[in-house]
Image 1 (tube, one colour):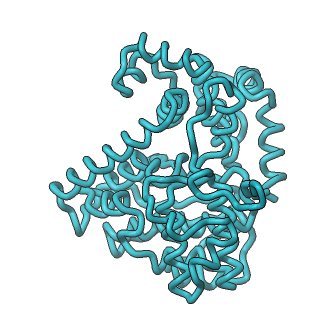
Image 2 (image 1 turned 45 degrees about the horizontal axis):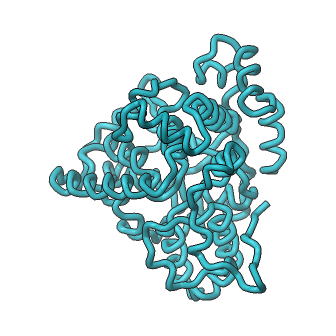
Image 3 (image 1 turned 90 degrees about the vertical axis):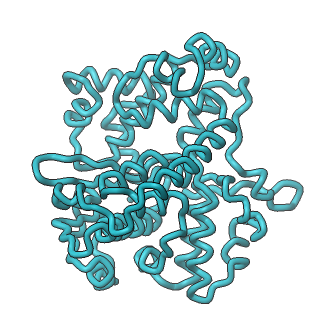
Length: 373
């Protein structure tokens, strides 16, 4: 399930050798597919985990040793590591702390500046809606892939928490605890008396379920089809108690510069793919994507060709990533997934998905949940 980088010449490779790097142009499609599956996460996340285990008496050296990481390498805030390494570190933290509820407790003790500038961007947003928008827009400063999506229907907002591809059931539970408690904490930072209507988890009731009630201050439901948070739509307009437009603008400028630096180190193939995935199941034309990257359409096409790719191939790859994300949400049927993806019927979506991935939607969903279980 979790894959560590192999030792070379008898020595564990350094973090620098495992930082997500641009694939060589000649690696072609297989390299891009590998990168699509093996996303990376910022060292800010690892550093936050290290600080959390230290608070309960576990040394950083003991935690990092399990992944062959040097504590001095944590200083590089803009570096990233494969998410499988982060998963392994989280599972090791669960073992070392002997705390099955560590995901809940980490978020409970989390300092408001732990994931800056993203944390401060959300805190200093004018409204909760702007806070969520900041989390969505700048998620790449922490994680290549978004961890949730919002849907608004009637007078309710639903936060759909995504499954982590390649994660064990224990790691998925840990991540769900962190994400759900973090989002509820964000909502209540805007409106301390906010009432969350429903919290559902897609795994069985854990032995320590009383901690959920204490930390979340509500009674969640377990064994549900999906991990969801439902709350009143009016809360999206709640004003921040720490609202500061000047600070927010300054932080946003910092975040935008950091995003730009991250993108400059990535091949154009991955930059285009990430922009397309952020758009969801839409088909932005190449002109718009080129403008977003500060290029002409002709220049972008030339750069993609130099990397052994094409815009058409990347669109297919991005659509496959988005479709897989929807299929991992057990709440959606395949017919509903087809609709979300913009298809008129499930048979057309079935053919498209098989063309993109070589697999059928049903088989992909069955294989994914077999791996999770």
